[in-house]
Amino acid sequence: MIANLTDMQGIIAALLVFDMARVADIADQLAGRGKFVSTLEFLPGEVRKRHGKVVDIATELAAAARAGDENAVAMKVSTVLMECSSCHYNLRDAERRKEMENK
Ligand code: HEC
Image (cartoon, rainbow, N blue to C red):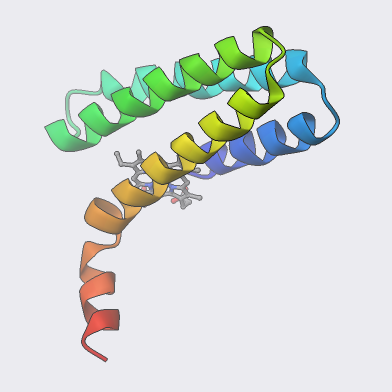
């Protein structure tokens, strides 16, 4: 969802000006939203589980920011992005992807 994208943009912008407190705040927000989504019973189990995964990584990202470890933050940003795109690849856009591959 668009709020997740906004959070990732905010985290990257804050990382690039070494504002670790802001990185941690936004990562907390990302984790909080993921936690909420992962409890929504009407969503398929796989979608809930994968949002739970985002929560775990966002929590680690916040911890890395609180520790002031910029390299670890950058690595966790990448790990979050891999989780976003693997879900979009396998669940969200699976049909569209098949069409692209058949062209
Ligand atoms: C569990 C699977 C899953 C994960 C993980 C996931 N997404 Fe999505 N995302 C979706 C689905 C499904 C949609 C389409 C939802 C809809 O149309 O309501 C979507 C839609 C979006 C959109 C389109 C805008 C919108 O509101 O429809 C953006 C941008 C987006 N996601 C970004 C992200 C980012 C950034 C992350 C990682 C922090 C992420 N997503 C993680 C499944 C996921």
